[in-house]
Length: 308
Image 1 (cartoon, rainbow, N blue to C red):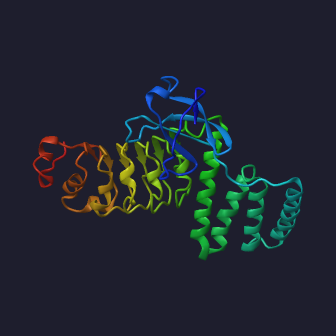
Image 2 (image 1 turned 90 degrees about the vertical axis):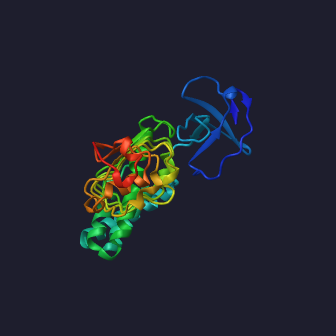
Image 3 (image 1 turned 180 degrees about the vertical axis):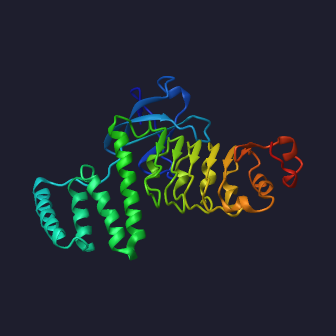
């Protein structure tokens, strides 16, 4: 890496995704006190200019910086290839008019639209994914996952097309998008607030990538708990998972640093003494379901927990 025309030898930490990279930098090589700056990264014989910003979720006490490329989704084609794909698309559209419920024709048309210009054709592609869910019930889950991936790609690309760099994104709203799975969390390392409410999520897969996350709102989904790896979210302070399927307080043990937890509408809240069981798992908890936990009584043991 070249910082302010001075070379700095770095070894990338391999446990992070490859879309963004983290760089531990000592204070003496940082050119200013600003929260972000530009450096040149050397990959073998190639050089690339990337923006770095401070990664708040790192154990190096704020001395770690993260940077990377913008998102690259879809594919590019030569003019000749695009011409052939466009001709194939016209043929598929003609067949689709004659057989509107032909799942293979719908899928082929969808894939051709993606190959030609997935972002410009995003509305049509989304409609076709939903149509496939209707006509092919046996593969409905598969199509729903594909649609979830495509939806997130469009949202992420849209954010960066507004002029933001891949390391400057601090909040993201994915609520009400019909998501069945999370994708591309490797582009969300710097996000501090994430809203994924009102979806169809059964699991928060790859949520561990969001090491800067401070507030997670995942109300009205189908979550039964939190996946392994969630314990890496050491900055997480507010967790709202109302109206899900959480029934066992042990499913929450991996978020021990959380201070505010909202669980209304989960089966767990129907069991006797559930508050004590939750606070036994989450010893830093200060607020449960919008009620403040009495720290004095918390010291007496979970069986004596009262809310005030």
